[in-house]
Amino acid sequence: MSDILVPAMGESITEGTISKWLVKEGDSVGQGDVLLELETDKVNLEISAEEAGVVQKILRQEGETVVIGESVGLIGSGSGSGSGDAEPSGAGEAAATQAPETPPVATSPASTAGGGKSAAEQAAQPIASNGDGNGQTASPSARKLARERGIDLEQVQGKDPLGRVFQEDVKTHANSADASRIASPAPAAPAANKPAAASPSQTEYSKPVERQRMSRRRATIAKRLVEAQQTAAMLTTFNEVDMTAILDVRKRRKDKFKEKHDVGLGFMSFFTKAVVGALKRFPTVNAEINGDDIVLKKYYDIGIAVSAKEGLVVPVVRDADRLGFAEIEKSIADLAGKARSNSLSLADLQGGTFTITNGGIFGSLLSTPILNTPQVGILGMHKIQLRPIAIDEERMENRPMMYIALSYDHRIIDGSEAVRFLVTVKELLEDPESLLLEG
Figure (cartoon, rainbow, N blue to C red):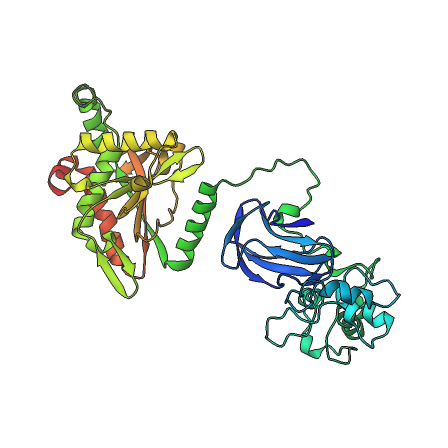
């Protein structure tokens, strides 16, 4: 007796859901016959029998989630009903004693009930149906081969008097339609032995590579980012901020601030306050789409993107409009520490209304951030760089400038609104005193 195991399904897939069993307990199967269909996040996979036998036990049912390497059923030796109904006790033995002298093929236990068929027909006889009541008269191996070659089974003429279609019938049909499609050095091999199109996990490389399994976090990040691009009408607008005033405040106040609050005075508190002030003026940027409704949020939970070892996470600073500079800096420092020690809770990550991401700490000069759905806005900060700026018609100065970017969902935020929101953020940052009033 052997296990029906869930095979490896790719670098990022660790589990799947059984979408459909194509056989029942008691069914006889041949090597290469499709047993079940498995649905994963990326692909639907057919699991075939690795050896001929009888399905003795189905351990996991349709709709259940299974993991790689898990046993979902058992295949043993013996005879089966061929129609999905288990034989009464002793029936298999009685049928075996009536079998013709010609040794049956391992894939065809149903040949023991072949009646007046010839020995060759009995030897080629696979399962007539899976007993699913849908009128399907093709064997699992025939269906699998037809799917692989794009053949409509209704167009295949079977040799069986009862109209049943077998693997050899599909091959004959394909041969008459296009001989080149079945050219193979071993045409007698079962269909399951024919290699499928190479998946990324099966690709061979001519030069050295290192394989690393994608973590669950990375897989989740990938899924969410793709979903954001597929579901939102995402657009990005840019501006630049003169950071002179903020740098001056930090230079004058950072020591006393650190001494009093035991936390450094960074840039994130200024940007958080500026974002809150702009969100109050443009409430649609602090909203989300729920069906045909726009949900305007009257609170300001600001997500701060943090880079951790296993990938980007976005913990949330709650009620940022009610917090002072020191409280914001402490909250961000605490959440960043949790992220890097992998101790964030689910509550730390849920419910943000707007996100700020700072690629500037890695040297990014300009980027287009992707929305953190279901939010409809995200602000990107970038590297501070000295650039010559025209102060007036006659005077130029080198100023510490930062490009900022706002990605937004164009479905509910108009371009003019997005531009004015970003201009408001710029104006508040260039006049830090206004943050005490607006933020």
